[in-house]
Image (cartoon, rainbow, N blue to C red; front, side, top):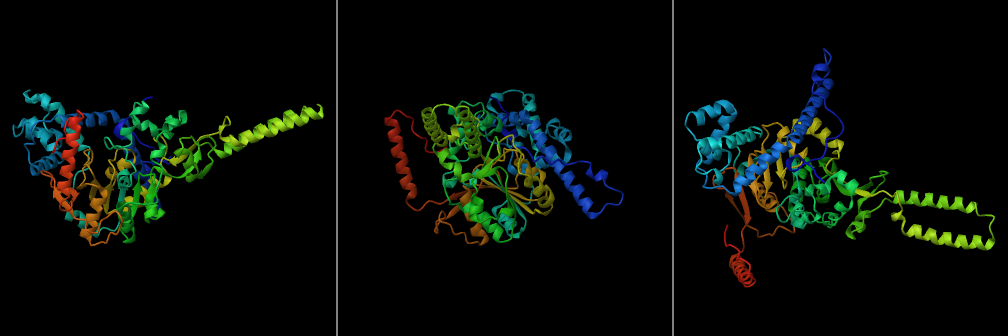
Length: 521
C-alpha cells in the first residue's frame, strides 16, 4: 500500500462548496444579508483553495521538511547571526521581496549565502563545508520560499507576560488542540518519536503508519485499525489540567470555539459545552456500520475492541439471520409431505441450527463492520467545521492558542494561516514547529504550561494532577526571544536521588554490555 505522507495527509472539507466570485454575482443593490452570505462564500472558497494547495504540493512540503531535518541533524557551528538581526532580515525579505532582498544582501556582499541561512534558522550543513558560496544558493532559495509561505510573526508579542496579557484581555479565543493535551493520562499522541502511536506501528509493515487511519485501507482490511484501536479508545473518565484550563476559558467568557483534533471526548467531560466544541476528527462517542450505516453508542463496541475482535453490525447480522431463517422455512415447506419422523428430526435439527445462528450472528456472511465515528483520512469533516469557521469565528476571533498539536493534518493545520494575520497566535507544546510562525512559543508539558499561565493570571487551577506546592521555572531559549521553556522545579534532594539512580542504571548497562547513558546532551 502507498499513500501520501507528512503535511499533506488529511481529511476532507465538508461537501459544501464555496464560490470565489460570489460578490460579482450580487444584484446592483444587495441587501445586508446577501452581502454577508456572499462574503461567507468567498471565505469558504479561500479556505478550500488553501487546503487544495497544501495537498497538491505535498511532495515539495515533504522535501522541505526532510531537507531541513537532515541538515539540523548534521549541522556544524552555531549561528553567526543574532536573533535580533535574523528578525530584521526576515522582515526585510517580506518588505522587499526575494529578488531585491538577495540583491541587497548576497549580491551586494553584505552577507554570504552560507551566513544568510542562519537568518532562517538553518545552520550551514557539514557536507557543504569548504565549498564555494554558490553551493549554498539552492538551499537558501528553499529557505526563502519556505519563509515567504508562512504567516508573518507579529514583532511586538514575545514574552510570557505578553501571552498572559493577551489571554487576560481577549474575549473570543480560538483554541486548536491535539493529542498532546491528553498524554499525561497515558493516552498516546501520534507523532512523538519513540512514544507516539505512529512510532509503535512499524511491526505492521505499512509504507506509512498513517494508513492505519485511512478509510480506503479500513474498508479493504479493518484488522489493521483494530489491531491498534485498543490503545486509543477512551479508558478513563478523568481529564487533564489542560482540559480544565479550556473549560475555565469558557466559564470566564473567553472561549469562542475549541477546534479539537482529539477523539477521546474529554473536553466535554471537563465541562466544555458542545456548542463551543468542534470535534474535527469525530469521536468514539458513536459507531456506524460501513455497509448499512446503522449507528450505535460507541461504548457497545469497546468490549470487542479490547478483546481484539472486529465488531460487526447487529442490524446486518439480524437481517442476515432473518434471511437464512426465511430460506430454511421455504425449504421446509417442500418437505411437508415427508414422514412425521423425518419432519420431527428435521425440525429439531433446524432448532439447533437456529441456536447456532443466534450465537454466531456476527459471523454471518454479508454482515457489515462497525467503525467508530472518528474521521479517517479521506473522509469529510463535519459540516459544522467550515460553517462555524467561515460564518462565525473568522470575524470575531481576537486570539489563537494552539495546544498539543504539531499541525500536520489538513484542513485543521490551515486554520492558523487562514485566519486574519493580525490576530496574535500562541503555541503551547513540547517542541516548536518550523512550518508556522507563531508569535509566542510556550514550550514544555501542556499541563505545566497552563498551570503557570493560570498562576500568573491569578486564576485558581485546582486539579489532582497539579501539586499545591508546585514551582515552575521559566527561561527564554537562547537566541529566540519569543521561545520560553517551562519546567517543574524538583524538590530539594530529588536531583541527587535522580543522579544516583542514573549512575546505577549506567553501571548496570555497562555490566550488560550496553553503552552508558550520557549525563548531558
